[in-house]
Image 1 (cartoon, rainbow over the protein chains, first blue to last red):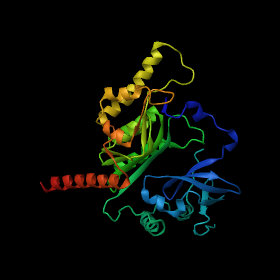
Image 2 (image 1 turned 60 degrees about the vertical axis):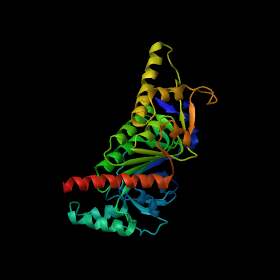
Image 3 (image 1 turned 135 degrees about the horizontal axis):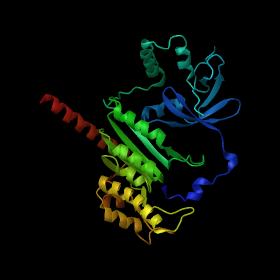
Image 4 (image 1 turned 120 degrees about the vertical axis):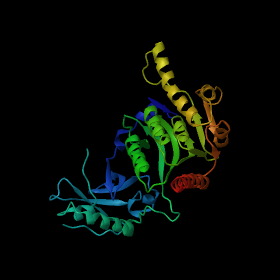
Length: 92
Length: 250
């Protein structure tokens, strides 16, 4: 049951084409929502944490690009590398 | 759906020796050096901040154009805050348009039953189910420009027009009224009056309360901003520490 000032039909109706893939992952113990982009890259869309200091961490700031490297060895794990904030590239 | 995804550095560390106790302290050091995430702050106390934004999502996942607060995120976070000895208090920041009654009440009940000091701050809007959430803390603040819309639970979609339907909505509404009356200075009758007031909203019954008005009606404790909310939280934390120390001396 919805108790909101937004009308119900506005909540449920939305244009189908704007449905981008989002995933929720754990980066260094903080919950982050990623928006899938092109070429296996993801952009941090939202940080979900109650720790106010986590929001000061530039690596977790919304807009940060993340590249995924899928490792066959540790399958099904996906390894992460944050591109534009100076973390070193992790190689096998 | 539930992909197991790990951060690169952690994956690398864990290969070969997964049960190494010494590794955790190294990781902690890494966290301090690289992430700047240190729990203990300069003031000698550590607070966590929970933001309630957009729609409160219930058992149905809302389409992605809605900004949502999900209870599956919030409830475990509240448990962790209550359980973690390093965290002294919680600041609740609200800017919400309302949402699912049960999810909202669940979060509000969790906060109201916490033993740690809690302070809320309503910014922008704390509408509908945002009202019980705002009053669930030990002390509440509202920004002068913020508003709270208080209106009855609405019928939407296909409804069978029988007296039971009305009664069901009335009982659901009563849960909200009771929670607000229990956790703030407004009486049940006055809150119901605000809900059913005519001439305030363009196409509905109900009331829009501005910052000062919400305080005058006894829903919110004080008009203020971030500094006053943090100051209040500090004083509540200080009070608890004093009580604890006093108890130990005796």
